[in-house]
Structures are given as structure tokens and as C-alpha cells.
Image (cartoon, rainbow, N blue to C red; front, side, top):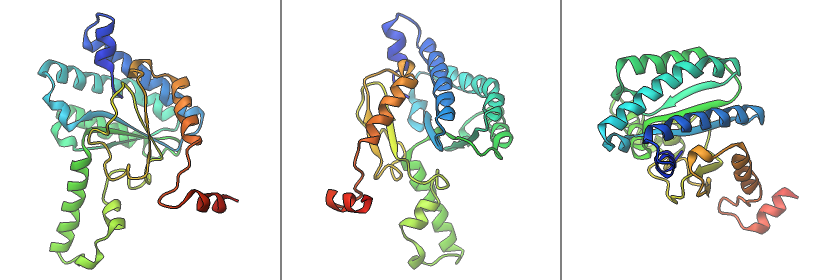
Length: 231
């Protein structure tokens, strides 16, 4: 969800205004995702690298994170959204950690849209924590080296329950993954748009979905093989 700061700067507004508008944009897109019955949606709310931003902005983001959760979780629950967080939560304040835990607990039994929020997350961290988990099992003799394969590693990663994403969307004009779901995006279709996040509305989401629908996903096969499989 890239471009909040630039959106605000173009309007001679403080960066905080961009972040607040970005939260409103996310709310609209979640509502649309529920309406069109998406199974899962994952949003990159705060990366491990974002701690390097000015202290004032980080503080604002943490405050906004807290207030958005507190104000939105009941509506999410009402709309059958299951809210989950991926990333290292231990870096957050105790109050924010409790708010996250309470939000997950409240919505845990919901069976509609699975909304994953990546907070203090990075793809490299994800792979590292999965490797550490497997290493501990090897050290305790619960696994042997021959047990380790791609499937086992994937099961220890964030989003293991959701499977691999089909469509990646990055707003704001940048064309890079930025340490996001590095393992999971191996065969994901990548969609980049110049639209800044606060301006990314449901219509823009539908454009991305239409683009995805016209992609031929081959997974290493030839076009002829795919066409034959679909015939």
C-alpha cells in the first residue's frame, strides 16, 4: 500500500494526512473484497525496514495502527472477516500487542474473508523464522535432514494456511517486491500501478483483477499444455 506520503505532499498536506486517508482506502477495499467474496487478502501495513523512518512518523503509524484496529474490528467481525497478523509482534508496545491479540481472538471463528495484516514483517524474516523452527525440530530429533523439503518449509511460513497468493498489487509507481512474501510470490502474478494508495479504489482493484483474469498461468508448462489441460 505505497504512496501515502507522496499523496499528501502533492496536496501540501502533512504525511499524517496521507496515512489517515490510506486507512480509509483500505476500509473501502476490504468492504469490496467481502462483497465480491475474495477468500483472502494480505496487506503490508508496516515492514521491518519502516522502523528507519523518522521517529515522529513511526509513532504516528503505531498510534494509527492502534486506533484503526480498535475502531474497525467490530465491523470486521460483523462482516465475518477473520483477522490475522503476520510478522514479529514482540517489537510493538504491550498495549498494541494486546489489541492485536484481542482482534485475532474476536474474529478467529469467522469463515468469510481472511484478512492478513503484515506488521513488522519481511520476507527474509519469514524464511529465517521458518528455518529456525525446522532447525529446532532437527536438534530435538523430531526431524531428520531427509524430512526437510520445500513443502515442509512452506508449512512453517506465514500464510501457510492460505496457500500461495495469486495476485500481487503494488501501488505508487515502484516496481519491486520490497522484501514482501519472498517465498510465497514465486509464481504470483505481479501487478504494478502508478496510482498512489489513497487513490486506489474498488474500481482500480477490479482493473487489477481483470488484468489477472487475462493472464495465462503456466507454472513452467507450455501454453499448449495449459490449453490442453483446460480443454
